[in-house]
Length: 240
Image 1: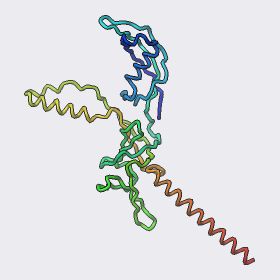
Image 2: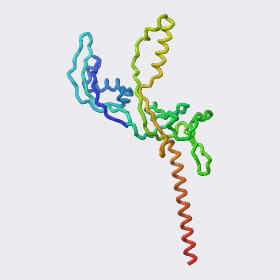
Image 3: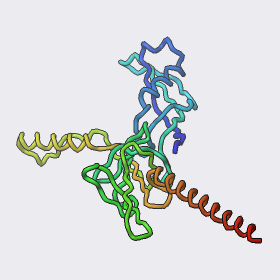
Image 4: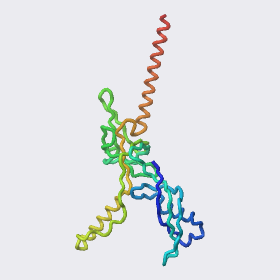
C-alpha cells in the first residue's frame, strides 16, 4: 500500500534559510513542496524517508538563493491493483459508495462493483445489498456512512491537473471567449489528480459488520448442534 519512490529535484533554498544546515534546509523544503501532494503516475506523497545524495549548490545570476540537485526517497501511498484495504464509508450516491482512509478520500466503489443485487435507497441515501435468504426472501443490508468497509483495489486513475492554457482560438467574440474560459475553469476544478476504484462483489468483502454477524450466527449454530449431540449421548448412556 505504501511504497518508496526514488525522486530527483533541484531544491531552492532562500537566503533566510542559510543559517540552517544544508541537509536540514533541503529536507524542510522537500516536505513543504511534496507532503500531501499527488505526483502524476507516482502517487500521494506522505513523508520524506531519506536523502540519498546532494550535489554542489549553485547561485544563479539575479537570484540570491542557492539551488541544489537532490536525489531522495519519499514514502508514497499507491496501493497495487488487487490489494485489499479497509476504510470507512464517506457517503453514498447513485454513482456508488465513496470511501475514505482518513488521509485519502478519493476512493469510489461503483454500483456495478457492489454486491449483487444492490439498490440505491433515496430516503436513506445509502446503497442496500438485498441479501437472499434460504426461503427465497431478501434481507436488506445497508451501507451506512461511517461503517468500516473492506474492498479490493481494481483500478487507479491519474489525471493531469496542470494548467491547460488559454481557450482555443475558435471563440472569436469576447462573449464566446468568456464562455470558453469559464468552461475550461470548471473542467479544471472538478478534476481529481489521483483516484482509486474499488470493488466488493466477492465473498468476505463489504461492510465488516455483515461478516461479523454471519460469523456469530455460524458460531451459535455450531454451539446449538454441539449441545444437541451431547444431549443425545447422555440419553443413550442412561438407557444402557
